[in-house]
Amino acid sequence: MRTELVTTLKRQATELLAELERDRQPILITQHGLPSAYLVDVETFEALQQRMAVLEGIARGEMAVAENRVVPHAEARKRMSRWLK
Image (cartoon, rainbow, N blue to C red):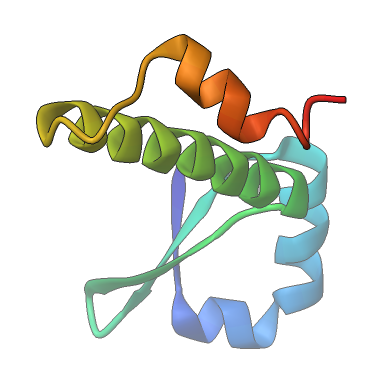
């Protein structure tokens, strides 16, 4: 992953976006010497969002199990029968 100054982003945005689309490698943007943002291509961002949604669903499921908020398979199937047709 490469690092660029925010001033480089301001001056060369078109070039950076073209490289980002071509290489699909995130670019760390720094401001005053500190990390400020990551610049990623659209496909990578959308894939990360999908992965995050799956992980959040798993975490919610694990929390439900830990809190004993579960039902037997037959009961779940009965409750969801209207959507399973």
